[in-house]
Each structure stands twice: as structure tokens, then as C-alpha cells.
Length: 78
Image (cartoon, rainbow, N blue to C red; front, top):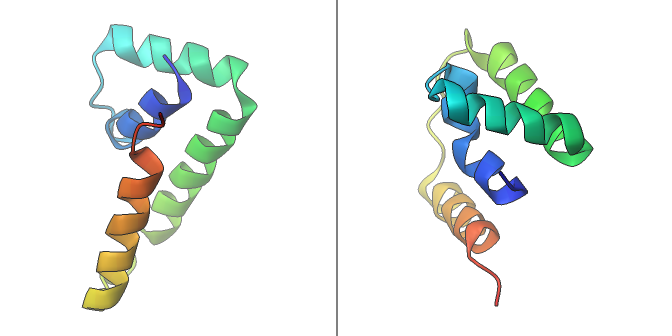
């Protein structure tokens, strides 16, 4: 498991939807990678903070910029 795979699977991990073997692999990576551990813990805290909050629709331009930023971040590097 590498950092990119953790980011790809973070939602499934936090939702408890990963197969046990993949969950173990991800947790092993988290025990060795403090950057990913921080991302996962902060994402979990954010989800917990906002899980009961009212849903707010993002403006279309914000959604487009967010999606583009995520695509750029997840794009394989040469």
C-alpha cells in the first residue's frame, strides 16, 4: 500500500467498507507513514464534526474547482 492508495481508499476505510485484508494493509501503512495517518485522522475528525450538520450545496464554480484540484492531485506523475 502506498500513499496514493490510502487517499483512494480513505472513504471506504472510514465507512468500514474495506475487505479485511485491504484494511490491514492500509492500517499497516498508517503505522509507518505519519503523513497518511494525519490525513486519515483529520478526515475522520472532520466527518465526525460535520456528520450531523445541515447539508450545504456548494456553488457550481467551487465544485468545478474542487473536482479539478482533486483530479490534478490524483493524476499519475511522469
